[in-house]
Image 1 (tube, rainbow, N blue to C red):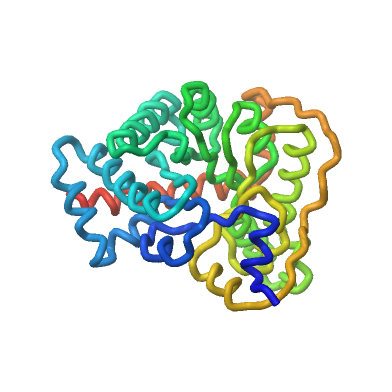
Image 2: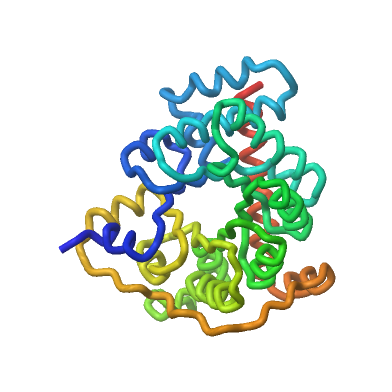
Length: 308
């Protein structure tokens, strides 16, 4: 009997969610995703210190050294996979459209200096209104974007309308919020599989965008257990941590497609006012978006401390 990982790969593109180059070497996924937290973790490993030193010794201001470090990890990852790597723009620019555009262009230029075609790079941008507007400009220039920190249908609709290549709805963080909000009344068994609030969110987004015929790819992210992953078999892509990849690979079983084929729907892109209001009305999405930006910003500052 095949492993769950083998079965899952028949329905979904497997992506490694890690900055650990050794983990990418082991799993050989199609694509890989990074973020400031994952790069910070990897940068603290002794065998990767040479990448940190090289970036620290680069001439220029600290923000350029930071981008150089992110790209250095990305280049090493791309040497080990056939597909794409996602590299994140500084989260402190999440409400700065022009600043995001400029940093994205610089990240792509750094990759191109290393002989990496821009088609193999996804620039990760927080799914704020300002970030989505930046993605709209970048996509028109041939710079592909991965809209991250996405927790709601309205963020997905706006990103798809802007032509984003890919969106990353965060399953685990949605689950975390609902579990914390429920407190002692939380029933884990009642919120498993397709009843998991994070899984439900991705399924709703998938049905909405695919039903509207959007070309934007949907990649479930931020998983807490393999049950969440298997409940999304059939999603375009799923980005999975090395620990959960290990569990899937070491467990045998059949995996059936879990996502139903969508029914046709019309998609009306939200205006800025509609976007901000609908996001405001969704307490979970509002809180997790703000929290995610703060956490990534904090880890970016820690990376800068290592470089300085």
